[in-house]
Amino acid sequence: MADEERIRLLEAQVSLQQKHIDFLLKVHGLDTSIFRHADDEILLELYRDAVMLLGYKPESIDEEIIHRWAETFLQLSEYEFTRLQPLVNYDHTWEPFYQLCIRMMTVIRHHEDIGSDLGLQQLYALLDKDRQNLRDSAIMMIKISETKLPTNIKVLLRGNEIMDLLPQ
Image (cartoon, rainbow, N blue to C red; front, side, top):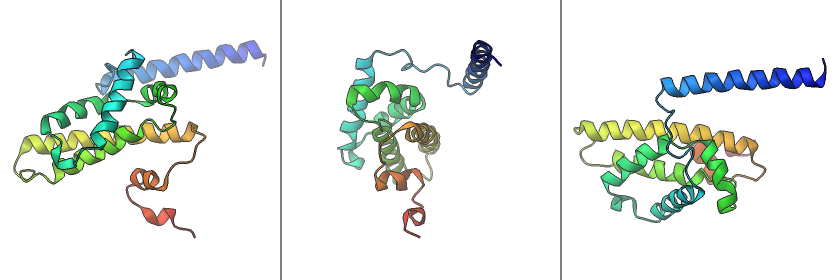
């Protein structure tokens, strides 16, 4: 097969896969990311806000802030994380978002009304969906990254299965 023909077939395959992805995103309601075409400054500000919030005591994070971030986490993907890499000079740009999501899940889980407040339960479920989305993006980013991942982050991504990290 000639190189030109191979290139045309690959282009057709990529185009078809993109159509499938667009369809799946639309079906799952994830096709409207406000960050997909956002300026670099907006992404950088979002990254800085996530890092800043990680410095707060978990109990001082207001429920309304958690609601806003829960919606934001759903909109982030490896595309936005890749765009952030040259802006912050760091390969694992997903990391503060993932850690913040985990921290917010902990805040909601320890809320005194979690057993009786349906809104808190729904917020926790949304954050869990966010965590899965961020984890999937993180795994994709790790696969293409050339830098080593800190052990504590490996533990977070594996769901605290630390036995996998111990020497055999």
